[in-house]
Length: 221
Ligand code: SAH
Image (cartoon, rainbow, N blue to C red; front, side, top):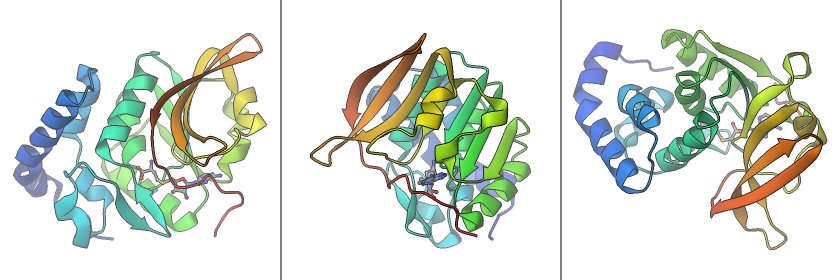
């Protein structure tokens, strides 16, 4: 893995990062803390060297294994939806590159993140250790099962799209908690969706159209 010298690269990319954050703010991201964290953290370290020069474009980029690092706008949007709940314990399904994980880790007290592809899980772990994200716990597993031992969570975030939410995840959401996820409708269109739990009722709120890779079952070692 290529992990360039953090200081040097951080300095040269600060301007492009500021420009990206300026665009995100114009596109409706209001949470100052989310924008500040994204202005500070190095997205280029979550990409292969050949793609790192495109890290501050507002676009999704491939991370291998047919998976993608989400577009900065969607990372910002999902992060603000989680952050506005001021959650302490958060569960993320789909660590992927680890970039969304890093941003969230700077906004919440403690974060658990599950990935089903071992190669991605390992690489994300190395990056997050390097960047001292000490409040993050990673696990290689099928995220559809959640993280039973740590439940309930104040917020759950899925970065892969399901047609129907796994029961285990709904069960691990605490009372008053929110689950932020892409969800596919009957026509195959995906919608960013906020599910809020009140006692044992789950209220679904459709937000904006999105495009994510599918939530899949099983683990790839
Ligand atoms: N947030 C990540 C997005 C990666 S794409 C990033 O910004 O890099 C979605 C990720 O979800 C992929 O890494 C994929 O392997 C993972 N995924 C899909 N289904 C899963 C499941 N059931 N459990 C855990 N991870 C899953």
